[in-house]
Image (tube, rainbow, N blue to C red):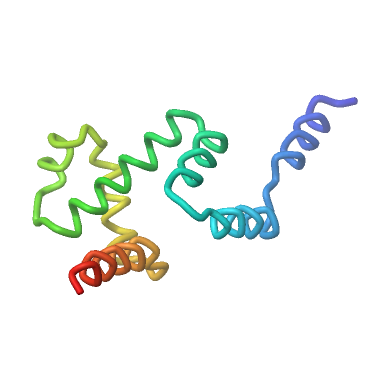
Length: 115
């Protein structure tokens, strides 16, 4: 078997399709508690991947509640300027609005606890 043919098979085996993503999203929707989520994430992610998620989420929250410069956020968090810029772009410019959806829900949840 030619070397390029072996590489092609390995790449094909790693291909993740729409069904795979949807299955993952459905799995998240089944989580019922913070503890379940933490256990699932520890099984699913390496410690470095989990740290990267947590760092990005921290940056999202800082960007949402402050006017800190990227340099200031970097100094506070240790997160790279490149990552901060990417998070800011997805928070403020991209059409997906996933960060915004969750930030708004968290604000409404905190607000509703007072009533």
